[in-house]
Each structure stands twice: as structure tokens, then as C-alpha cells.
Length: 140
Image (tube, rainbow, N blue to C red):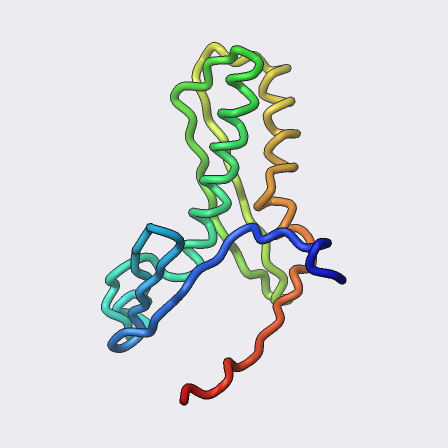
């Protein structure tokens, strides 16, 4: 694969803090992640799986709002609720429940479900995501 075949979609820098707390920078945005106290953290921010569900939910809502705006549909209020489960066989699944305003018809709801299944983060998570991990060269 050549550099021109690759598009950067996102970048983040995560700096480990005390305990399990993490400082995260994505562009100009700064936020934190941590584990809950029950798992040895100090609950200074959402846990990694919570961030993942937040990302999927945000992408879903943004994509649906863009689509609805093009169609002139009023989704208000739009809510995306997500739960991540691990089954006994160690497979994982997400339950995603959409709710929107009363002006949306059953036909429109069906179309929104179809659009939700094709959002960028949904597609990324649905594919087997390859993660390549290396060490940076030692600092001088």
C-alpha cells in the first residue's frame, strides 16, 4: 500500500497519568479516560469502552442528522442509546436503540435504520479492524 492509497481519518495522543488515568489529545480537544474505582481507577473520565460507545453513538447521530437535513425531516429529539455486551463465547455485540420525534413515519424510520447500519464508525467496527502496534525509537 502506498501513501497515496491511505487517508488519515483520526489521530490521538494519550499520555498515561497516575494510576489508570489517561490524558487524551485529539487535535485541539483535551479530555480524560480512566477506569471506575471498582476496577482500581479513580473514575476521572469515561472508561475506554464507554468512549468507544460514545464514538459510535456520536457518529450515528451526526450521520442521521445530516441525512435528515438533506431530506427536510425533523428528527428532534434524536437519541442514540448503546450497550456493549460480551457473550459467554467471548463474542461481542452492540445494541443500538434510536429514538426520534413523532413526525418521523415508519417508512422514514426504516430508512434511518438502514443509514445507521452504514455510518463510518459502524462500518469500521463491523469490519475486522487491523491494529498495528510498534515501539517508537528510544529518545536521545
